[in-house]
Length: 309
Image: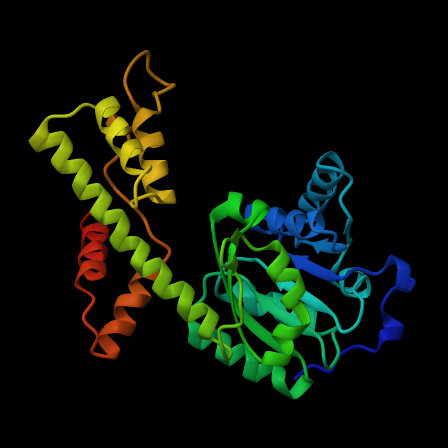
């Protein structure tokens, strides 16, 4: 294990200059979640492997209302800008980039600090990372984030799992930044490390099933009933005003209405390739279901169709 560098090797900032929370990794999700936290009054330090995105994020913070967000030039500068105990959310590509980012950050962090991985991750990897950081006294949490780039900016669903004392450090931030419903914020403590990733994994598996059901309804309406795109869009929009109301139904009717801007006529749905990719979370759900002898036929069928495509 690499010993943490003494604070004397970090740049000096006054307490007034320091931030409540840090976010490392400024792709679309990272940028938007950083701006979300800043919009709720939390001072946010941001950092990224390539500095260009730091400047873009700082500029967005200024144009979106002079939000309390500050950039950093490197990992040491980023960590130095955080108030102790430090709290860092990382949003980088799953797998090796997460391990590399944790190694760089933990080199400057101290016992009692907290690292939260907000990416889609296979839950045993979060357990492994927590165990690796334990000798350094650094807390680790894995957290699922749902809602896409719009949710990250305006209110996502947050699924954190890790030590309860670590969650207590960020509870106020996450409950204020999460989507709000009549029953409360879409954020809460889910259990030990790995549980947040597990819930997000199952959530994504269910979403695979929902999307396949919608695709099959579309297929029947088009090829059996003989409906056109606009007619189907009207029906899906009507359904979205009933108990079927959901984000997926909403985007379905919007997609069906979208005109193709590369041709003079027609809808995008009629030109787009009938093929889909995937990041792996749905597959993990089916693997875990099989491992535990739990029948998940709808999700399994949805995964099969994705692979067939």
